[in-house]
Image 1 (spheres, helix red, strand yellow):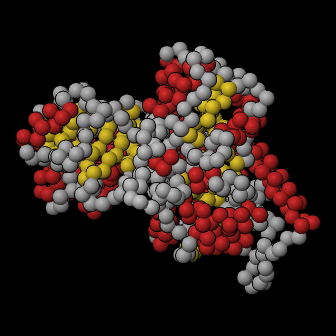
Image 2 (cartoon, rainbow over the protein chains, first blue to last red):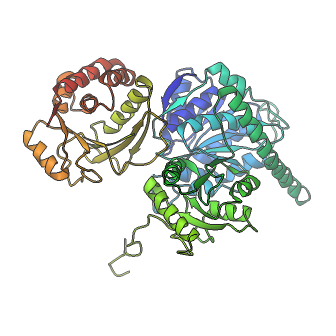
Image 3 (cartoon, chains in turn orange, green):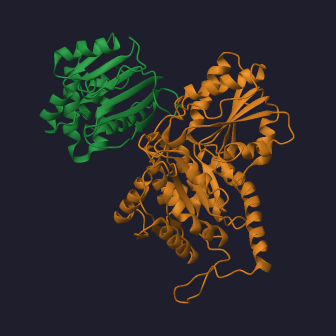
Length: 401
Length: 183
């Protein structure tokens, strides 16, 4: 399989090219711009035979995507941050109309304070919109999960759109080696788009997404819920087929050295490599440390997580968004719910906000606290890690107001 | 594993150089590299950084470099601009320095205690071969002196990256490689 060098944005474009969309509607936004721009290049140069609709906003980008895919063609779009927030309304339309759009989302903080940099506040705000969500740890996974997402989302038992989330800059602008399947092999895996149980024809004008009466609405949501349930099974099947074809393992959740672990972190996204690195360092010192990475966040693989973590004594769940007003970060809330009733101690860690690096140094500190809990030396942890001591003193207004 | 940090000034192509280094290592040296560039409030003339981790095994770390084995300084004004290029360095950290001013070598050695400094007038090599004050390709030639990447791999990656002006960039890198001295 040819080795190519891609940054995360280029890997997303390559996987979209391999899936042969017929319509593209994307609005550029940092750090996703490379996707919108390179898709335009691919169309201009004839490598993607699609109509590229230049839209004036993300709200329109998703509207075009929904309408176009209803006519029976695979569509492509991508966004980030406030672009995703502007898309929010129409994301619900795609999900409720069961239009299985696959969309890379380059994770970037939501305002305010204004930021261009990575955290998960944008996609976490969409976690209940009715989309599947996959979070990539490497640039290779951007390619692999996007290709797989078409198969999962478009499966007749699922028919649910999918976000493939990649960390802004840490993946979108990170050059890494990527094994890339030949075009025909990828096409043989992704397969042509087949429209199921939906219809739209410009020559036969009709109204979609009309008012749904209360006596059917609950049942329509029930159907979506069943689709999510099926997605968990279909994802496993698709990942197994992917591994058979291409030799690379994909995960709903990835266990790393958890078998006999006493302490572990739960991670999501590009921070996970640094966590593995520190787990290896701790293991070299005889410390039984492990890691669980959540790769598929929607549907949330609660049973797998409970099973993987059942024998770990102390766990830290690392969220890359603040979860303001909640009892803990959003990933931690779900992990705690999944493990409810067990004896494991679970602590929320929040950091990596708006581009702050989560490094091996961060994980050494986190594991240090978890180990102290295990040894009975402390009973709480520093939830907001790598936060400046002077947090409450910065940007204080000195003029009378 | 070798951890490398690039220090440049906006417009010098330091981030591009980091990506070219990734190509050289991954495609022409059959090793692994992860590049994490730092994008900030970009404007020409402000400091820019890029972090690269190179290994003969797949690289797990996908974060910044805090304790570099090699630092590459694209502009000798960076110290005077208040950039602490010695941050996280030890005397074993190798400094690759672009300068045409011999006195800067001592200045940088005082700042970081570097035992080994690879000195090169990369800007001169760039102006001579490319006709532009963009030292990034030449600095990769100088970096090849440290052994972390071969000069042939650098040249192949430059040809891949720069299309029509690839050969001029290769000439700049080779000139810089030949002219780099250990100080």
